[in-house]
Amino acid sequence: MTSPPWRDTLQQKGQYGAMTALDQYVRLESGGIWRAGPDAQRRDVVISFGDATLVISDKAGRPLTHWSLPAIIRQNPDELPAIYTPDYAAQEAVEIADETMIAAIAQVHEVLEKDRPKPGKLRHWMIGGSVLAALLLAIFWLPGALMRQTLAVVPFPQRTEIGAAILGHMQGETGAACRDPRGAVAAEALATRLFGPETVTRIVVVPQLAQGAVALPGGLILLDHGVIRGTDDPAVAAGHVLAAHAAAIRTDPLETVLRQAGLRTTFRLLTTGDIPADALRASADATVAAAWSDDLPTQLSASFAQANVPSGPYAGTTGADLIETSSADQSFREILSDGDWVSLQNICNS
Image 1: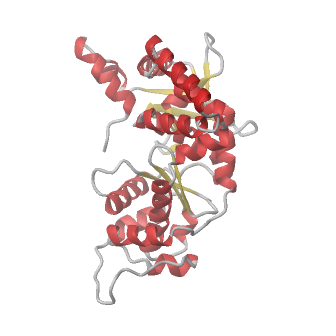
Image 2 (image 1 turned 90 degrees about the horizontal axis):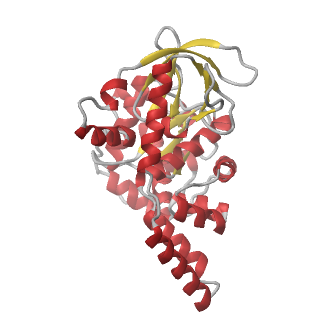
Image 3 (image 1 turned 30 degrees about the vertical axis):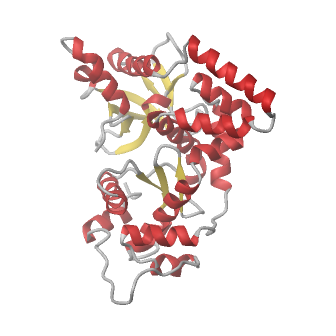
């Protein structure tokens, strides 16, 4: 599994010191008080670091939720206990009094902020000159060119942060992402089976998603648990994932976010590396509300053939008009073992 960006950065910085921040914090745990919503009952929990996440578990060690480390917000700077939320919506919150854990979270934020690409003076002049020239040449040329330039320079780790933030906003409608450990391993196995061992695609299962599956920036594919629960054939779930992946190949999910947010947000992302929280929230709302569509049958049929997955089970449950590329006597590789499929079906049961 690929190491999370914040750990890579901490390890690189630690090459010149006796003890890295990773050495100090990789096994760090502390107590805390968590609430799932503004009116929810407060619970004593255990806080620990995961892969690019802050893991909140009950006293028995069962994960209750995972928060993206780069997206965590401290609501009361310089006060104790520290109060954190996973995003600006502030539905969930956790109180942490342990100063070591607070320092660890702060250091991760500091490292990520220092390593975020920051435009220098030369880049400012180049961008300013390019924009001015474009405005003089043709006013209608600018939006498309600005979009292409932005999509070309936004690095994958930043796309992952954007996707994680959108997922955080979506969970009010989809339910919290399912985190059963064995189910998560099965989801990773499904991604590897469909896209190969070097894939950066991550499958995240949510309790309800009307479209069946949808792609977010950063290689995230959300999959409706109902799709998994409603069939005994892994090819149906695989088909939904392949459909979302094919749609993402045709139209970059980050492009969809920026077109919804407008030219000003696109320019802000290019020059500062930031997207306003309200733009991310609007993108999450639009993604949840989007209707399922099947408007790329040729490309999707090719995706099934490349992944060596039968298209019939998916087409039979969705009504998708796919071009059958397999012969009647063709054999297909196993999509998931029986054990992994059962684990994936139970991913939302923890």
